[in-house]
Image (cartoon, rainbow, N blue to C red; front, side, top):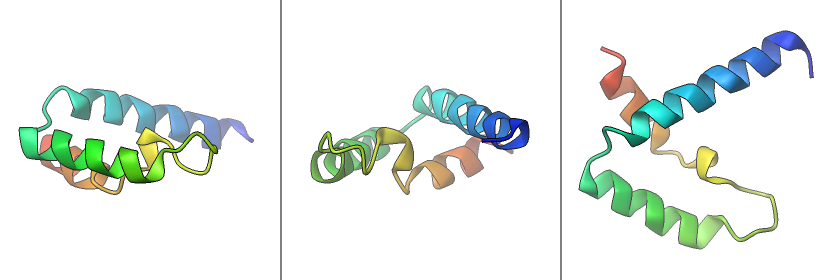
Length: 62
């Protein structure tokens, strides 16, 4: 992985960390339900793959 990709991935993780601090209860519930179904330990999906992150990040980016 080149430096640009690594930096982009780190920036995404930083946005997710910030997003966790402002999530609504509904968002937390949605994430937990998604994790139960998709984060199974196979390595296919992780918490950072939750599709709801984009909406939370967009909300706090303004």
